[in-house]
Structures are given as C-alpha cells and as structure tokens.
Length: 345
Ligand code: SF4
Image (cartoon, rainbow, N blue to C red; front, side, top):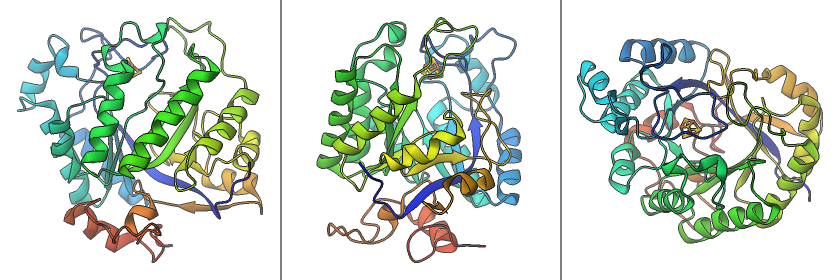
C-alpha cells in the first residue's frame, strides 16, 4: 500500500487537560486520578486562558480539550465544579471553548462517550471533535470502564455523524485485542463513515505501557505490528479518511515507513504543552519531521477540521453544508488558504 496523498499533515496545538477526574479505570491509564489524590485537578478559566494565549502567540490554531470521562459521576466532583460557578460539566467545557474562540483558537474537544444532547451543546463551538473507538472487542483492560463499552462508543460516534460533526476516531493497538478485532474495528469505522461522511481521520495508536499502572509490565506494541495495522487500515478505509500516527509514540526513524504504508497525518504537535496523556513521550519538532520526511513527503499544517470539510468536496457536498458554525467559519476565513490548509505566515 502506498501513501497517495500529496501531503503529510499535522496540527499545531495546545493541549488542555481540563480535568484528570474520570469515571473509568482503564488498566493502561496513567492520567486518571482519584478525587482525593493530591494531584487531581480541574483547570479554572484563568489557567486555561493562559495556555490559550501562549498558544496563540506561538502560532497554534488548535485548542485541544481532553479530559476524564463523565467526571460528574465521581463523588465530590460536582462540589469542585460548583466552586467554579457551574452545575454542568458540559456547560463548563462549552464556555472554555467559547473562550478559545474569543482568543482566536479553533477548539477540538475529546469529550468521552457523551449523549446526543451533550454533543449538540458542544457542536457549534468546536471545529471538530473526537472519540477513540479503541476496539470493538470487550477487553480485560476495560473491565472497570463503563464508558469503554464498544456499543456506547459506537453510538457516540454515530450521534456525531447525525449532528454533522467533523470527527476523529481511532483504534488503540496492543491492549489485548486480537488481529481480527482490529480488522472488525476498522470495518465498523468505515461503515459509520459510509453512512454519515463525518470521519476525517483515524488514529492508529500503539500501546505503550506506563509505570504504576496495572499494565506496566505488558508488552509495548512492536513496530512491525504497527506497520501491519497501518497497512490494514489503508486497505479498509476509504482514501478520503486520513490515517494518523501519533508522532511522539513512534520512533522518528520509523515515520517514513509508516507514511509509505498509507499513513498521512502526524496528529497534534505542540510547541508549548506536553502530551498530558503520554507525558514521557516528547513531541518532535517541525524541523525534525521535515528532515526525516526528506523529499518524500511534504509536511503541511492543517486545522483540527480537515480541508475536505472546509472546501467543496468531490463527492458533491456543498461548501460547509452544516459541518461548522458561523463562529468557526469566521476563524477559518481568517486563517485558511484556498485549499483549506493553514495559510503560510
Ligand atoms: S484512558 Fe481515559 S477513559 Fe480511561 S481511565 Fe484514563 S482518562 Fe479515563
């Protein structure tokens, strides 16, 4: 399989981990905290605004909001939220997204498996949103994570399609699933795309064990298995869907091979914030990536919403056609070139 895309894309972002309180307990997770842990947090508006402003100064255009799932389900969280003047966490996230838009950043929220109504609350203040399917298989790693029920996640991805939200999903490879589960997961994603046209990229994320988690002694996914999965994804997914490899979880020298097998996106890269989910894995710089890609592929900066949703699509969809709101449109007009990528300079 060959990467037929002209570009390898990435998005320059700031990573905003709104809260590390989460109703789930995934066995590989090093991010989640219990409410009474010393380092449990809910970022307040001033903290978020400070990150957003620094990102803007450094030329970032994406505000990536990621957080634990349904923190309100955890006893004691509502009281913390009330101290910030909110009764609903989704309203809190919505207002943070509004703040990002005011500052000139395009929000991309990873909200976990939330309801249709909650997705609707976030839609018009987000350029795009995301939820990893992870796997259609029921896995031991998820036995304490009600939100990782595959049916619940498929329903959320489907609801995003009904609401016309440009969407990112993906699979987490090497957490106990079988090869046929990977195939099945990719087929389910393809089928959802064919029904709603909303999936813009699929992340093929390799499992890397974290210290002090239940899976700390579990095997990291070997790179040849990742290459195999990228090739499988390219075989199953329509070519309009980008295949993303997280640039900080793969050795730099492996990136060209991943691209040759069909990957064509390197995800978010931040000049100022770490990957809070994988803090031990540093982002490569743009310069590092350009150098390793050499003359083979052109590195191109995109927005969190892909060009196909900004420009007229070949399959006959009208420009915009309900994929994003007026507020998002204003920022896109300010920053985008004619091809829907970020304008140079
Ligand atoms: S991986 Fe996500 S959903 Fe699972 S425990 Fe960690 S924060 Fe929660």
